[in-house]
Each structure stands twice: as structure tokens, then as C-alpha cells.
Image (cartoon, rainbow, N blue to C red; front, side, top):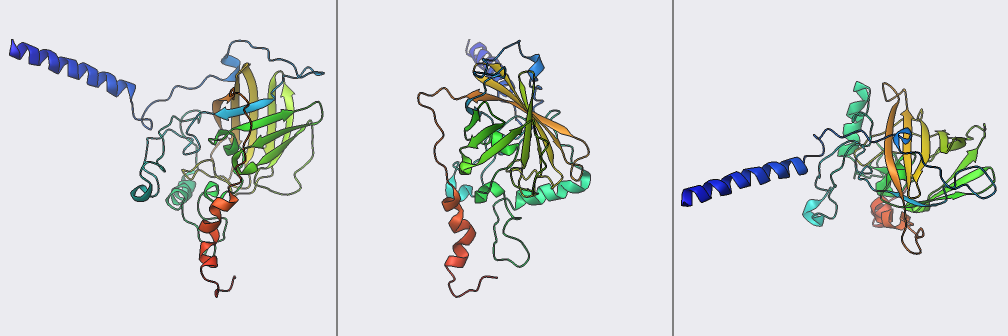
Length: 302
């Protein structure tokens, strides 16, 4: 009887263990199921903006993803200083938002991505060998996040849509703002962190063509990067009263072998009294960026 009981316990443990392995698969090695595109959702007609025939996208939206850590599939990992911060700075696991799972880097560009990741928390504004802006993750230093990264950072953003020629997007992170010029052919006056956004409607989808980037922003904390040839085409499609399907096609012939796409849902914030709060993070980064200068008053700035 005792042997039979042990056999039953052993078999039960094997079955439970197998189930757990299936339920908690490693994210990086897991074959992520491709998310549906906007055209695959059930037909939905969004409410119209008063006085127009355009869908009303006004509201506060937020992505629920760990893509800001890595837009490709990734396991949970320790942070930069686990000996000081424990799990506070740990990286959550996440599935890829990149269609096909992999970013099509040119082979010679993978070394730069690796170097970016290794130096993601390195900042030296007084080195003769590096500029203040090209070492470390720009998010670490509270620089503007760029497009499309601003959309899937772990902060809400607000779409402000009126009856005029512009749509405004306000992001909570770093109090970033962005203007979409509707049906415009204007060229960007200069390269910038957030680029130059021109929009138009395709049925109920807001299509935003973004050019005029500098080469200083990253796609995530994993060191994924681009050049100043970056061209992003975004698509915001309402698929329910509470969801937008977001897609972005990324083209940069200097860095990638072909254009590639990311896609993810955006969720309407339904909290009572939901609003963007102030997150002026510049002061949080001042010690990191300039502490060495402040602590060495006799040192002359170069």
C-alpha cells in the first residue's frame, strides 16, 4: 500500500511539473503568437468627433507591455546593480512586439547594439573620448524618448484631438509633447528627438508618417538603436471603446536589412478622474550627469 501511495504521488508530481513548465515557458525561447492586425479585429465603428466624420481618439491611453526593456522576447533578468537594489531594478520578462520576433539588423550593426547594452548605465559627460549624449540609454538621462518608444514606455499618454489641422499627443514621461500636422507636406526644419509627424486618415485609422529624426534615441533598454535615416509610419486604429491597435513600420537602410513592424494594443485608462501627472525627471538625472562636476569645483569645464 505504501509503495502504491508513493507511485501515485510521484506520477502526480510529474504531471503538475509538466503543466507548470508549459504554463511558465521562458519568454525568450517561447514562440510568440503573432498579434492580430487591425484588419483582423471584429468590425467596430468608433464614435465620431463632434462636427466631423473622424473617429474620436481623445483620451488617456497606455501600453501594458515590457517592451521598454526589450522589444524582442526576453526572460526576466537582474538589473544593473542587484547587489544594491535587489529586484527594484530587475527586468520583467516579456514577449516580442516585433513581427517575426527578430529585428533584421545588418550583421555589422549587431556589435553596436551589444556595446549599447553593455554601456546602458554608463554616463561620462566629462570624457574627451565621448560626448554627453552618446553613451548610455537616453531614458536613463531623462532625454526625450523618440518614436515609437514613447508609445510603449510604462507611462500613460493623452491624445488631444480637435477639429483643426493638428492632433496633440502629451506623454507623462518627461512631460514630452508631440504635434501631428494633419494633411501636411511640410518638411522638418531640423532633425530632432521626436521627429516631424504628418498625419492623415485611412478610414478609421490615424496614419502618422514621422521623419526628421536625430540618431540619439533607442527603441528600448536592450540597446536597440537607429540612425538619422529612421522613417516610422504609425497606425492607430480603434478596435473597441477601450482599445487602440497600434502598429509602427520602421525603416532605416543604414542599420536594418529591410523595413520591419511592431504591433501592440493600447488600453484606455478608465480610472476615475484619470489624468496625466507631472513627471519632470530632469532633476532625477542631474546627480548622475553632473555630480562629478559639482563635486570638483576646481575643475574647468571643457
